[in-house]
Every structure is written in structure tokens, then in C-alpha cells.
Length: 111
Image (cartoon, one colour):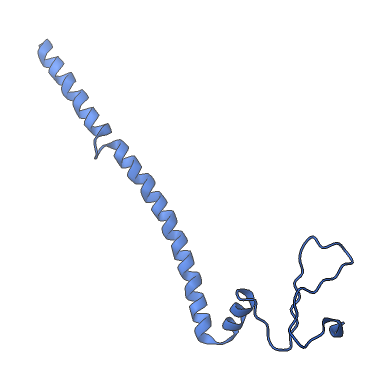
């Protein structure tokens, strides 16, 4: 009888070891849950990025306003006859600086 109980305990410990520490056990499943959660967050982030890009593509197809806005914001382009002023932080009060202007225009004429 003691031998049978000993064998049963060894079998129980062996099965528990396999259930917890094998490649299909509880710890492996927990690692997979963490990976799935990370992938889910990444998927949500990519879906949001795709929605933004889709909206930009549709705006570009619709008219030139989106192209002009992109040229102004990303490329720093300006129209003919416009004057570009760059205001930087940290300039003391009362000091006015013109960083760049379109050739042929005088910034003082606009005041």
C-alpha cells in the first residue's frame, strides 16, 4: 500500500511539474497572454495611424488645400508675395527679429 501511495505522489508531482513548467504549461500560457496583449495594443495604434493616413489621402485627392497645408507645415513653403516671420521663444520683450523674408519684400513696409 505504501508503494502505491509513493507512486501516486510521484505521478502527481510529475504531472504538476508538466502542467506548470512545460512548453504548454501555465507559465508558457501566461507569457503568451502578455504577448497577445502587447500585440493588441500595437494593432490599435496601427489602426489609428491607418485612419489618419486614409484621411490624409482622401484630403489630397479632394483638392489642393491639403497639398498647400502640407507644403506650409512640413516643408516651410510660402506663397509669392508673402513674408515669412520666425518667432522664437526666449527673445527679450521689445526685441523684434525677422529671421527670413521673401526676396523683394521689405518687412518694414507691412507695419
